[in-house]
Structure formats: structure tokens, C-alpha cells
Amino acid sequence: MRSGFVAVVGRPNVGKSTLVNGLVGSKVSIISSKPQTTRNVIRGIVTRRENGEPIAQAVLVDTPGLHKPRTALGERLNKLVYGTLKDVETIVMVLDATGKMGPGDKLVAERVKESGTPVICVINKTDLASNAQVLERLAEASEFDFDAYIPTSAERGDELDVVADEVFARLEEGPMFFPADAVSDQPEFLTVGEIIREKFLDRLRDELPHSLVVMVQDIAERPNGSMAIEALAIVERDSQKGIVIGKGGEMLRIAGTEARKELETIFGTKVFLDLRVRVEKDWQQRPQMLDRLGFEGS
Image 1 (tube, rainbow, N blue to C red):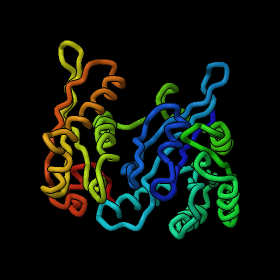
Image 2 (cartoon, rainbow, N blue to C red):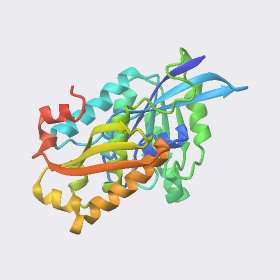
Image 3 (tube, rainbow, N blue to C red):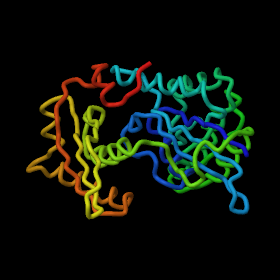
């Protein structure tokens, strides 16, 4: 049996979560066009079988995008990523094929190279890039002498089998960390909160997506088998509360309905979602509030 942990790193919005979801074959991390969508270390589990029996297991750690932090939350997210690099067998570094390898990408590349851990470089979003752009990204990344280079489109599923092969080839003998049918180890409350937050993200403008967090207060099964969920959408200012609620409550209603439908698919039963909005002033800058919301400290 071969097994190990694999960090998926890169700048915000390069497609790390889409790549992890594609490799797992199930949605374990939310996706948005907004940077910094992922705020926790999300673990996706891929188990390879032979003749029906598990022979290898890769635990993919989908990390928040590395960025220049402007808040206490941003500092915690970066520390999560750098801490993860020390505890994995392999690193998958993701680059965006449609844009040049900028200073931020190079900083990430230097950090993963310094870790001494084998690095698989994935050039993602090839479906949106020209052949010349892909070749240019490969040439830029080749300066870091990584262990493997794979152009992919995680959105379309192109070459994901090649990425998986490279990951599994670098695992060593080890135990099964999770049951063979597991796809994630995330607590139910976190998963539900992230699904609700996802429904707001691409509808919110400017800085507001970064000021929004969803805290699930209760998940209870009713006698008839349905699920009752209580959740708070938390923002930093009164003006943001009005935007999240929307005119006549439209934004809250649409996001809540979409979240409820997805949750019903996950739970396989009817879901009653009680979603409310609360202001917690400057929560991203308050360590005690970050602790309450489950963001790990240093």
C-alpha cells in the first residue's frame, strides 16, 4: 500500500480547487472567480484501486492562495500554506496558463523549491490559453527545475489522469489514512458553511466577498428525516449587510435557495435552511473572532 499527503499550492485564482475536485471526482472545495475563495486547508482523498482493492491513497491538501496579506486573516492563510509544505510527501504547484509568471508565482516557486519536497508543476487553464502561452509558461517554470511539468485544463478534465499518475508515483509505503470510499475529511459544519458562502461570492462586488464568512450554528435531523440548518452570514459593516440581504431580500433568498438545493443533493433529503445576516465589525482583524470562526492561528 502506498500513501501520502500532497499539497496543492499557487497564487489565488489559478484553479487549485477545480484541480482538487477533478482529481477527487467529487466537489470537496468551493469554486469562484474571486481570489481567496479557499480559506481553510481542505483535504480531498483519492484512492486508487486494482481489481477492486485499494492499492494507494493520496490525501490532497487544497490550500488558500498565497498572497500579500492585508489583514490578520490573510496572515493566517499564508501561514497555513507554508506550514503545510513541511508535512507533505509531494507538492503540486499550479500556474495559470493565461498569464505570465509574475513575482507572486515566483515567490511560491522559490518557497516550494526550498522545501526540498518533490514538486509537480501543473500549467492550468490550457482551454483558455493559446499554444504559445502554454509554451511560454512551461519555459518560465522550467527555470525552477521541478520534477514534472503537466499542462492541463482542470475545468475540462484534460490530463488529470497524468497528474494523478505523477502524484501516485511519488508516494511511499504507508497506511490507509481514510476509508477507501471517503472523498474528504472536512467537518459537516464547515462543508455546509462553505457551500452557502459559495452562492454569494460571484454575486458580490469589490471587497465584499472577502468580508463575508458563513458560520453554521446548528444541523439537526427532524423526526421525518429532513434536515434543519441554522446559519449566519457574517459581514464587517452595516452597508455590507444591506448588500448581502439585497433589495427586498432578493440576494439572501436566491443564495439561500441555491444552497438549499445543493445541500438536499448532498444529504439526500429535504433541507430547511434558516439563513440570517449579522455584522461583526472588522472580524478579519480580530484574532478572537478568527478563533471563533475556526481559522487556525500560527
